[in-house]
Each structure stands twice: as C-alpha cells, then as structure tokens.
Length: 331
Image 1 (cartoon, helix red, strand yellow):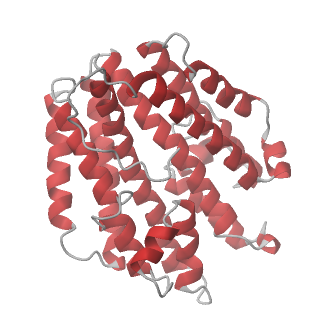
Image 2 (image 1 turned 120 degrees about the vertical axis):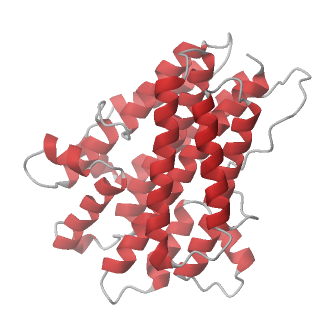
C-alpha cells in the first residue's frame, strides 16, 4: 500500500472520531451548563474546556478581551472554518481523505460520509445556538457511528481496514483520557465535594458522555464509586472506550498492518501497555488522576510520532493528494 493511501485512511478515521469526540466534550458542557448550580458562571464552565482541547491561544486570537462565553466557545470548536481543530474542519478533512481512498473503502462508507459532510456544511452555515447544540451533537454521534458501523460490516480485513481502525482507536484513546480529565479534574476542582451528590452526578455524566452508563451499571451493582469508574474507563478490556480496549485494539491493528523493521512503533505500544499494566484504580487515585492521564497522553503522543516516522513520513515521490491534516492537540 502506498504511504499516502495509508495516511489518508488513518486521517479519515481519526478526523471522524475527532468530530464525534469534540461533539462529546461540547455536549458534556452544554448539559452541565443547563444543570449546574446558578452560581457557576459561563467563564467557570467553559474556560477549562478550552484548556483541555488546547484552544486557548486560538480563542484569545479571536477574542482579545479574554471574555469566555458559551456562544464563542461553541462557535470556535464547532463551526469556525479558520480553526483546524473545529468539528467542521475535522469532518471536512475526514471526508476529503475518504475521497482520496474511495477505491479502498466501500461505496456505502463513501455515501455515508459524503452525505454527512454535505448536511453538516448546510447546517453550520447559520450560527449554532446553545439551546440547539445538543441536538446537533446527537446527530454527529449517530452519523459517525453509522460510518464506523459500515466500516465494520463492509470493509475487507486487510491493510486498509487496519489503518482505519488505527486512526479511530488512537483518537478515541486520546479523547477518552481528555474527557475523563476535563470531567473530573477541571469541572470539579473542589475536593470538599468528593462524595457529595454533585460528585455522584459528575461521575454519572462522565459515563454517559462515553456511552458507558448502562454498561457500568450492569457490571457494578454498588452504585457509582470513583474507584470503580476509574477501573471501568481506564482498565476494562471489554468497554469499547476504555484506554485498555483502545490500546489492545491498536496492537491488533498494527499486527494486521505489519511492523516496519527497525521502527519504533512496537516499542511505543509496549510502553503504553506497561503504563496500564503497572497500575490499579487505587494507585491511580492515590497518584492523582490528572497526573496519570498526563503520562498516558505523553506516551500516546510518542506513538503518534513513531507511526508518522514508520509509515507516513516518506511518500517516495508520490503526488500529494490529501490536504494537510488539522492535528490540533491530539496525541
């Protein structure tokens, strides 16, 4: 497989997963805004979100007054055409890369992503109001799920499928870690609230944002406890958005593609596995959830660099067909 084809498959899937996960993070804050205590200001609720997705500088460039409002943040992260990390640009780039690899994906996949892009482009021509945002983000979740469902049921299990899975799971691992961080560490910084009804709500909202609330309740029967949620989201090998599941899936995808001799991908994957194997839920909470997730994201970023070097860096004189990929702050 040509390097540029492999790279386009990878970024097609990664940008679609990013669009979905950006919608998830925004959805968290929209719901929190509607249900939060009246004393919580817009700035208190939305500034942490800019920090976790690495959009602080982009926001200040557009709004020198520094005032953080829900409308401004939603616009930047959802429909700003000049910000590479916006949902709009993630979907546009995902669709463009799908166009490059139309002969490697199924016709059903192409039709789904093309219609998704055209519909989103029409929808986001007008300003997205906060009270309509949740409905739009639900639409994004459904369409991304449809695309990956079609990939699962219509793609041949070869290299093309491997690079598609690789992009999706790498982005998912990155954003699961960031969602967990923003939900607990940033939106609930007051340690006096740990164990309170608000604390219970925060953990429940986290699980719902990862589509894991029902699965968690079926597995754990003692209510929502932080230590159990940490075990579930970080270490459960059967939960599709856990860090463990994503790393295991990355390993299988690389095995399907094949390792590059002398490359660093195997070493970087081993470091991620060791990071998960060497801990327990209690150790994570004792160490500090934020610190543990920071270390995980650094290891994931190292894997990104290794993938770039081993598989995508040298196009061997191939014509450049895919557009530059808006990588944002993802690992």
